[in-house]
Length: 399
Image 1 (spheres, rainbow, N blue to C red):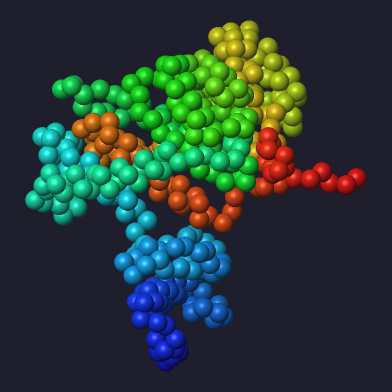
Image 2 (cartoon, rainbow, N blue to C red):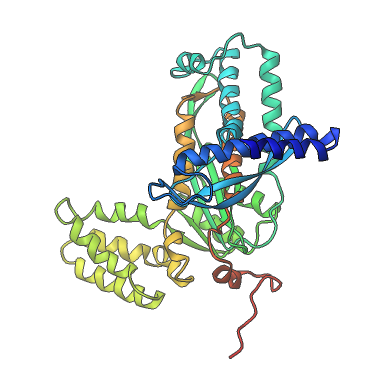
């Protein structure tokens, strides 16, 4: 405690009046984080204790916007689990968006599922139209700036997926698709690329969505991973001129539906031998052999395997280090799960703008979390050679 008082006194003596408040806020926040981490690890920083519950693992930098200005924080990291200070409110923006959706529903007289319980839990009352307008305008500006930002550099891999939500339209309740695009750039970093709302997943909708991404700068796409939505494959070829990878997880469900309940385990094991091969040629040979072995007993399954061979094995033509993340839409499924969890609270959206507001805020938060992660989603050494830009390609090692 004495050391803390001495440090604070020294801070007061050397800081100008303009910076004093910001420096004090940073000092208190840093000390608070250290005390919280001491409680999680079971020992003070640097102390050797055999009963320690966890180990520290360095720091990560984070800028904290406060009324006193921007405060640069060093957030402690743990070897097991994660730590994030509660005062940073990582979900603040999306919670504001959720509040705006519910407030707008009230103002327009729209009934949403369990909305009364939710409003009471959030402590909301006495909502005025002017408050709704100010809150929605603030969020819309931030979300639209994020969703329309320029996309710089090459994006070798892009994942596309859709989440269906209910919205009120002309007195009816209809289902619309919220289309999300996530990509990995030539630095190995993952980002949310875009969001759009459509009534169907027809080819024309996919073409327009991909063209919007292209106009913002999306280029250098080598592989697009998605489920087998109608028109998507043709749109990818027409707009991006990229290879299409059909989600392996979704396809396996379709294949095993023809195998019968008792034969699913054996069939799944047979098909998995193709995915275990070291290169694309060996995988295709094994895929055909498995299809031929299954053809006499389950001809429909074998015929489907013949049809999807090139689409489901497309990822095998890319670096082996990337394949676990390329064969399915799993990297985007967690994001979709978070969107569904938080949009289910609303139930029925009052309009499409409310969907864009809430889902866009969730995507913006997720993108910020990915940006501050120290580790790249894919290593620079393995992904740089895929770039079309010669400036970012790694030099060839001397023989």
